[in-house]
Structures are given as C-alpha cells and as structure tokens.
Image 1 (cartoon, rainbow, N blue to C red):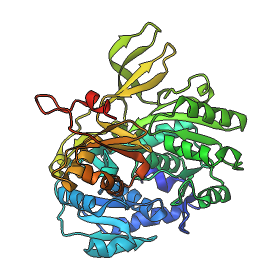
Image 2: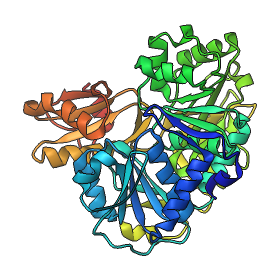
Image 3: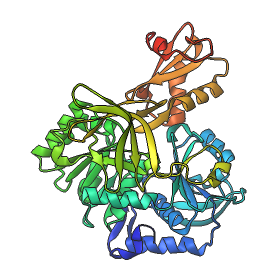
Image 4: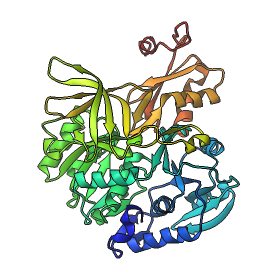
Length: 466
C-alpha cells in the first residue's frame, strides 16, 4: 500500500485534525480499500484540499489506487477553478461536502466531511508513470502543472524521514497546506515511518492553533519565512511547548536575522532548527542543513538529501573561494516535467532525473550551498510560489484596457499600471483571486510602462519608478 500504510501499527493514530476527526492507521487503510471497491477508472481527480482528515484520506486513496489527483486549495477562486476544469477535464472531484451543490454532478461516496462527485468529463489517456499533479503557482490557478511519477513522493518521503531521523513517536504539525509541496512532504515523511500527523485549519495567529498543538503533543513544525515572522511577532519564544523538538524551514529564504534568531532559540531551549530547500519539481525537499551547523552556516540550505546530488551549472569561481552558478539537482524525487493542457498528460519523463532550478546559488569551501538569487519570473510570497506572468494574465482579463506589469521580490509583489482609476481596486481584486493577504501587494501608477522596440518590458527602468 502507498507509504506502507498497511505495514504500520494499525492501532496507532495516523491523522488527528482540529475538526474533530482522529483516524488510526486501520481507519485509513479501510478507507483506501473502500475507494478501491468503487472501481474508479484511471483518471484525473481534482482534490480540493483543506488541512483535515477527509482531504488527506482521499489523496492517499487516489495515490494507492492509481487515479491521478491534482491537489488544489478548497479556497481557490471559483473562476480560476472553472478555468482549470475546462483545461484538464477531471472525471471526479474530492471536495468538502459543502461544495457538493456548487460542483454539481453525482455524489457517489463520502467520508470524514468530504464527498466524491462525478463530473460529465470522460476519462482520457494518461501516461502510465503519471501519479500526481501540482500547480506551479497554486494561488493564481495557473494551468501549468508539475507531473509527478510513481516513486517520486515515496523517495522524497523516505529520504526526508531519514535525514530528519523521524520515529513513529513523532507527531508532525501540518500547518502548511497539503496542496503545497512542502506541506505534502511533511505529511508523507511522517506517515512513511508510521508516525502521526496533526492537521490544523486554525492559523498561526489563532490561539486555538497553539492550544491544539500543545494538547496533542506536536513534536515537529515546518514553516515558511512568513511563518517565522508571525511566530516571532506573537511571542513564540515565550510559549511552553515541551514536546516540540524540531523546527524546520523551507519555501523561501529566511533573512539572516531571522535565521540567527531561530537557531539561537532552538539552541537555548534544547530543540533543533533544520533549514531545508526544495521545489515542486523535486517532490519537495532536495537539501537539508544539519542542525548542528545552523549557527555556523547562517542562511545556508545545507547539502543534498540522501540519494540526491546538488550541482552548479555554468560555475564561476569567486575570490573568496566560493563557486556560483545556477543550482541543479539529481535524484529519484525529480518529477517528469510540466503540463499546460490535458494532452500533455500522456507525455513521458522529460526531466529524466535532473532538474535545473532557476535559482542562483553559491557553494562554499566546505560544500554548503546558499541561494543568492532567482532567474525566473516567480516570487515566493508567504512561502507560496506565485507566477508574475499568471498574475498579469489575471489582471488583463479583469482590466483589458489597462496596461499592468508585475515585478517584486519575496517580500512583496509590485504591480504597475497606467490607469489611475483602478488603483484602489487592484489589491482587493488580486488578493481575492490569489488568496494572499493584501500586504503581499503594492500598486504604483506610472505615466507609461517602459518597453524596448520589441515590446519587452524594461524592468530595470520600471523599478526605478517605485
């Protein structure tokens, strides 16, 4: 069974959520087998994810029974979801019961607050290796997907569990969404060793979040940079959380100040801080910094996880002995490539075990890697990868007569427009579309968007107008 779910202690709690559900490994396996008895065809299933038991058991069942789930947020804007539906034509939805009427179709099964809804779309041919789909920019509903193959998720779960030294006594805290590659890996790596996962809908600023974690003895936490900013703001370092032993970080680069604060907190409180790095294209994590090195290698992503290899493309030697270049990775967790339409789901493995990240990195004399920049048109806002191109497309669809261009960094997206009339509308609109807080955006009104003779935006000149 997927992740050896049937080989773990069947009486042990596998999933506990703050919606009131607690499932043993036996409960999970029984639900997986109940899905198997439905005899669903091999097809695409849209999983509308929340941090709860019902969402998770559906994903586990589809992976085990060879359907191909596309993991999406249950909060995804309905218009963006409809667009994805038209592009990928799922045969089923696995979604919260409350969404059943909105989705239409025939409800054929339900469990733990979720329902399986059959659509009018017929199954179509899929590559035999294809196991799961994730969006490259989940917040914007981009049709560009990452195609996972069988073995990717299992390999990353196995190797991450090994490097973190997870034991079956662990109770992993699932604060990151399961439709986000890092959040999914937290789940997979704990279930792979027979540990428990605590799924929490409450957010980090809600006292109920921390009450649930304390009451249930959460032992490990993984956050994005924004998570740690919130935790410092709310006085996390003064909380009594005796069972919490591991603090991990991924999904973006911590500032050196925050990195030092977290590492010092862990050292002073008998805990460990594990910085990591990964991408959807590598099924989550590809690098891990030994917590013993956290204070010596501030800002480092560490070295490759077991069975993986980090390398630099177009290396350049610096005077300080460091080498810089585009970061690449090889390993069994490298996915098959991308899809932009349903016809792409028949394509074979295009990455062939090697992925070039688009991130510029340096490697120091001790072999430790550091991310120092990014080549592509993506930001990581609150730890979520957001496509600048897709954001521009969404703005263009809403404001066809306005020239809008997006740029920015991992702290904030900058939106430039020539139309003063829509200035106050843009942030509420794009915030609702992407499900990102208003503070992630800033709007600038300019006289014109600087472009070259080929119509390409001159981003350097544009940023001078800020």
